[in-house]
Image (cartoon, rainbow, N blue to C red; front, side, top):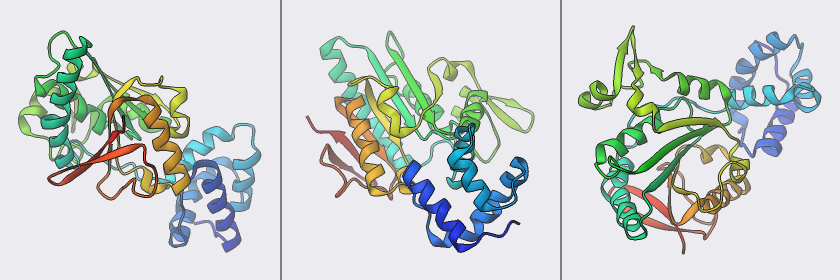
Length: 278
């Protein structure tokens, strides 16, 4: 493992905070050195200081920025995670959207899984749509998974998952929406038809989604890595892209209190979600 001096940790810490709004706490120094060692080997660099200058000044540094973000964030996820929120989606939010859209004769719905990692959440949302019975006929529905890490986007598009990812997936849904392939499971075409993925930096969210174009955004267990200013900038971008009655789902440990007044918290049993203020 490469040695990381305290001043080198400070350089990386300040860089990721300034560039990505990510918080890198002091207790991560040891694990960071371990994670960066393979990057130094691949790039043929001899020290963390050299790596810092590569991040700052190399002509192809954008790809390494993505590699660094991937190392710093936890991409582990699974299907049907935090099911209390998913129950709220299926039983409260989707029926409300259906009623609203029927009045307006608008049979479209757009859901974004922001920070989608390898796609489990996006495909989960697609399954809930198809299982809800709300949008099966003559509705134009789309789930879009976005992440800054191109490697996990590629995995999401491949749509092959191991047993751990599907461990809490209801058996009937596993049979209906997946095909056994070797030791894993491949997503069937019925899910792929309404699910797509894009590489997107959340700080540039409004460059990719038009104003008032989205109904629901899931961004769970993502903003815990951000400083307050980055959280504010991110969720304000979400608010612009959401319709006036749009919904935002954050992780259980994430809150918009003292961050922004653009959203109204909605409290359900075991779950809190947010709706854009009208």
